[in-house]
Image (cartoon, rainbow, N blue to C red; front, side):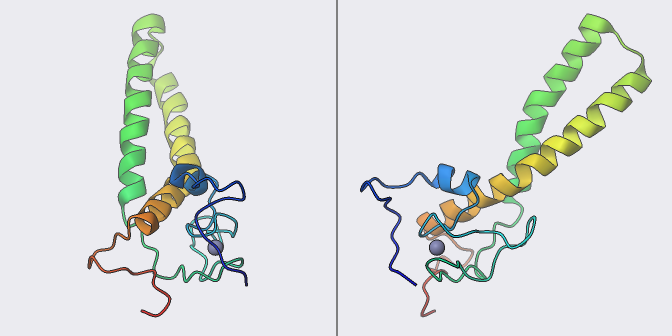
Length: 134
Ligand SMILES: [Zn+2]
């Protein structure tokens, strides 16, 4: 393993949002953050950061609820007022849109939350959970 920082090859600090959306390691920005769809890898394969301590909790789901609610509810109201489709058509259109949006956003939002927690050393206990010696 090689030493890693949160600075890229050009000496610029990596954006935690770009790193999280790309589902990359919060420390090096290169290793994979996830071992499955939403399962966080045990360690970064590039820098060896212990990712078992990463816990985003319900944070990603809350943001997704806000984002999808902000987008889908006005869109459904606009479709209703503009086209007045029957109820069965609403029931056919919106559940897949919401389900697809939620599944599509869950992984990148979880990545962003984990990277932000790492960058700000946030944890439930207030301690630095990512310290390799802890
Ligand atoms: Zn790493």
